[in-house]
Image 1: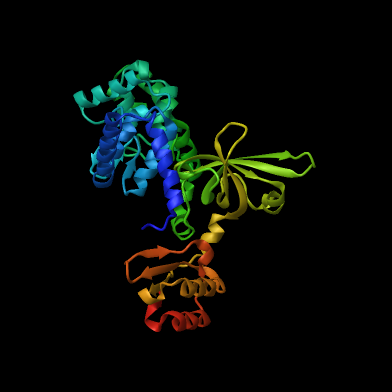
Image 2: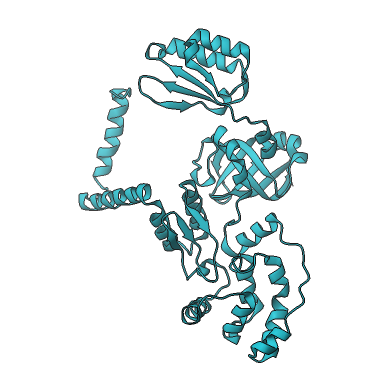
Length: 408
């Protein structure tokens, strides 16, 4: 009934029957199915609480945290940075669709220090400034290596968003607290003269956030190419499967060149997307063409095949196409081509003619087929994007009917 051959169905059933000889017992399988159904229900209907709980359970696994945060963002969950007045130790659901980082996610911050911050906040109220924070905490916590990470991940942003300014003044502020001997009046007299300095660039902020949190909180560089991601059906690094051909948006963190036995240059490019890390291999035939077109800090559009590395057993991408994401997005258009397919047109010959016609007019406009009978909408893969010309519109109308062709 589903279009599979009987021989193939029997082969699959034989696999199932063979597994049943040594697989899970029924009670174990039922329990897993029941828990799986519950988690699926919660993920769909209550994504905020679901991901908050999931993140709390994996806070010590940076790779999983990054993967779950990326998935949460896809489902419309806002991820808030650590906050000196709002965060406790772990991830907290602040609203039904809003999760805040805990202070315990910051590398280098001790649990007893976090407990002291929370206790002081509970007993004496919110902190009002960095000076106020330094004055109120115990002197044993007034150390740059403990305090700098808090500033550089944005924990004081709601009090003062100038992260670099606060970081540069931290040592002087600590000294003033010590010299004042606990006197607020004397501390006021010793207030530092403020000289504005250049704030961190977005790239610097992102690098510091990744250093201390393992993720980019101010927004991953690849996230500004959402139109490109939708049109070209980009997949996430955590969704990669061996032997598949894929399209990625890839933020370049490191480039390592080597020479082959023949003396040709090739490269291994390390980088990531919002969900995870990946190594990309550029063999000589491709690398000689693209070597001068990208550098560290660029966001690239990549096509290639996923393979398992023989060196470390991890997934890698063997690239066969590389372009600047910025250039490709500029070529994109908001326009879409909608084609209604009536029941009588759903036959192999008609559809083959349609696909051939589409491929004769390549461009940057995606095509969506709307099947009248089933109501299904199908977006065609990027190789079937078209250019909006009078010639194409006329040929499509002749094939499908004037009312069934819409560009908008």
